[in-house]
Length: 104
Image (cartoon, rainbow, N blue to C red):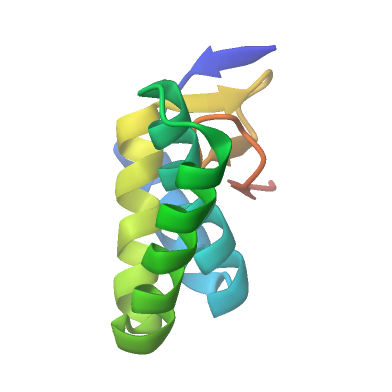
């Protein structure tokens, strides 16, 4: 079950820091999958979604810095505004396949 995010400013800082601790591959996977899911929701067919998502991934791999990818992941968490039941894992992509986990 998914919940809407409801955390303090300190919690958002922890989410930001957790995004910046992810490696580049995980960030690329999450951002690309969110883009794919957005296209799919708009009605594009699977092949077109895949082609467009791979094109985005190539651009990100080539031109985006680790810091920029982490900032994008954080922005997606803010935009998607969803976490797992209990509020410990915050979704980067809209389907919840990728996220950051906060621990005590």
